[in-house]
Length: 423
Ligand code: DOR
Ligand code: ZN
Image (tube, rainbow, N blue to C red; front, top):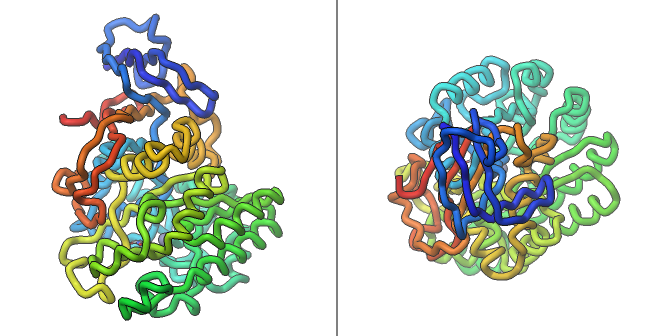
């Protein structure tokens, strides 16, 4: 099917485009709309059209926990949220720490996925932080990055060797930054609310410390290290300073850390439990500032599906994580753009070229001949989030019932319409 997408506000950060115009899709790629024959025409007056969003932090749970999510349901959720590519975290069961596991992921994604699934391999065997994974064979199998997400390598010498290997195989590192000794036993942010609620806290210093470690290793080996789900003010400061010095570190912020604080936990609702935990208002403001000024170059969801039964336990015992793919655009658009904090073109970078740069993808834009991976959203649509409508198999979100602005309208992957609002 060919398309002519008319009258949209086209924002294409890779080519510094921000204009009202038309885009054509022919045989799966971007084409001159004036030259396409036999196309379906879609009027997009009032809508925003951008390169497909990339989420560099997604847990698809297959293999291992397909009651919570599958590659089919997780990629359907991605399409609904406007994401055309997702980086699949390797903390599955078995973990994605071998070429065979990556091959399984690729084949299953090709068969059942509706958006592009970019495999990420473990840094260490079974992401246990003890022994390096076979990084060369992971690279040959097609991983786009390395991560032990969910855990953090505590042994700095081992991490140093991983950085050296990652550099020789040209793989970016995506690191979950957490010092286990400092964070031990905590289930929420350490601060006023953990004291008031009598819940064990984890100090933000646990994150700050590992971010400092990673900045040192990135500088020493001149190789990029990306900090996943940055949550505290001090981390934003460290990354800002390192980047100003030319050190190749990057960071991401999640929609929940940008919009919620640890005060939410006074309800004891386990849908406010994730790792890193929701932090203070001061931390949240610093994170927003970091996203706005380009210290933090990507918004990533850390989509972490868990079943109702897994989450329906005391706060202490619930697993960490919330789903995010289907609410990310609306929550962050509301928080960052509708609020007047960020201009739309800069915000769109955090969902497109920002993550593409972290993955070292070149030329992520809407030039003619490129893959037609396109997201179209309605910046004025207001609605109330209803988890019952999710494509994800899981419903563990704190955003149910929240009134938001900005809603995904259509998602194309390789020229194929994979999501249309209301269809
Ligand atoms: O909240 C989280 N959930 N943080 C992580 O680091 C892992 C993730 C998961 O896999 O559930
Ligand atoms: Zn993590």
